Length: 442
Ligand SMILES: [Zn+2]
Image (cartoon, rainbow, N blue to C red):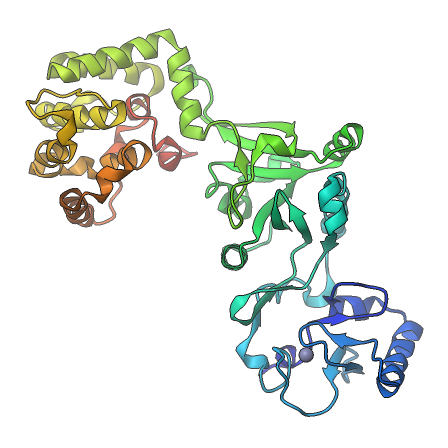
């Protein structure tokens, strides 16, 4: 058991309403202040009104210094307290931010961003009244605790943690924090500094690739905008599909937004733009492009007629515009047309495949035309993505769920055929385009 485990991580100190991170606070004191705090802790405890308290159990603590000069706090007495930092209990609890203060080396940039977030949030009257606190000791269930960079007691109807994402943050730390905030129903907002150039770093990808390509940032310009508006502002950075003739190669778009432009979701959710998703945006690009729009409609019509020659011709035309695999590479044309027909039926909620089965009997149609014939099972993952977007109840039909599970297991996690089909597939079926996105073409 290391000494880290034994010291008290958060303390109440005179002049602060909330617990502070013990080591950060203590190390910042001058020799004189530190000496006086130690004396005051001892004296005030004797008088029955202790000023230095444990951040968890509020028991009185005293200040100590290790032989290496490390300042820390310790409980008075030897009682086993109802406290996660009492010696006997300490091993059972963990801080999700144990590394956050290590060596007390918080960068200047990080500090400046934290102050900026506090100032921006303070323009919201409710948030300011309820309290905006940097590094607030935040208790979770299961004995976990965290020190969010900025904690707001009331933000968009609930508690919110703003965590500054640094280039060095590792994915295990990211997911630990995310899990902590979800479990404790605290909204988590990752914030970066407003420099697009840094966004291809792994640590940032680890966040926005799990949030529909979106991430919030703050910088001096955002703060100026907030001051001018007298209300919070953020920079919303989004990876969105680029131009049609550039094959939708994604580009970063950014704008300064008001809190109303963000869907803050429920507590535990991650914030997203109130505008459409990446996939919706891609669909709107296609709808606005006369040529692609027409080709897509003609393909749907040809699928309904089961005219594989016409479908193949139109597919290759789309490939010529946006890229993708040639029609001949997709396998047996008849199977591909039947599969696409079922996928289009799910997408459009309209029979787009040659069949006698009624739309009301969609599970049967999906099973018999897509999930059962061996040659068409390769499109099972594409079907799952489309159904998740348009026909969630279809995935709950036992017969469909069972076949789907079998077929997906049969794919052994190989790259799926719709990935291989490429951007032309995104034109027919934009749902899942973000999920299929590759920033570097193979
Ligand atoms: Zn305690």
